[in-house]
Image (cartoon, rainbow, N blue to C red; front, side, top):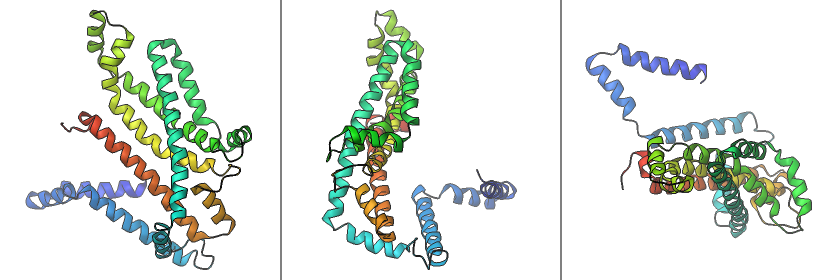
Length: 287
C-alpha cells in the first residue's frame, strides 16, 4: 500500500468517524453504495486519461505511445480483419493444448502426493523448478528439438506456465478437508483413494478452480512468448508482435497488446464463471 493510499484511507475513515447522525449515515451509505462496476469504470476512465496525457506530452514527438483514439481506430479495424482472428485462433489453440497438458501434469503430481505423502517434497520442488526456469533460456532448446512448422514451443511454454499454480492450488485444496470427515471414512474401512473421491475432492474444488482461473492467462502468455522462437510458422499474435516491432509500428503493437490482454482476461472470466457454477458454496451462492 502506497503512502497516498494510506492517507486517502485515513481521510475517509476520519471523515466517517468525525461525522455524526445523518451526516455519518450519508457518508457511510455513499461509500458502501458504490457498485463494483462503477469503480471499474472510474478506474478505466482515469487510466485512459493518463494514457492520453502521456501520449500527448512525453511521447508526442516520437509517437512511441499512440493516443487511445489511434489505438481504438486500429482495434476496430482489426476486429473485422480475418488475419487477426486467425492469429488469435492459432495462439489460443496452442495455449489451450498447453493448458490441458500442464494441468494434467499438475493434477497427477497432487494425486501422487495424496497417495504417497513422502512424494510431497519432490512434487513441490518440481513445481518450483517449472516456475523458476527462465523461459527465454529453455524455449530455444525446445525449438531445436521440434521440427520446423511445429508449435511445440508455444505448447510447452504454456504448459510450463501453469504447473506451479495448479500444483499449489490443488495441494492446498486437497488438504482443506475436515479431519472429522476423513476419520469417518477411515472408520468405515475406506482408504486414501476413498477419502480423495468422497471428501477431499469436494473440499478442494474451490481452490482447484481458483488455480485454474489464474493459470488460464498464464497459459496464453506462455503461448504468445513461445511464438517468438517458432520456425516456419507465420500465424499467431506473437508473430504479429515481432513484425510490428520490426517495422516500429507502435499503433499495431499497442493494438496487439490490448488484444492479447483481452483474450487472457476473457479466459480468466470464463474459468471463473465455470468455478462459480460448479462450486457455488465457495461464493455464498446456492443452487
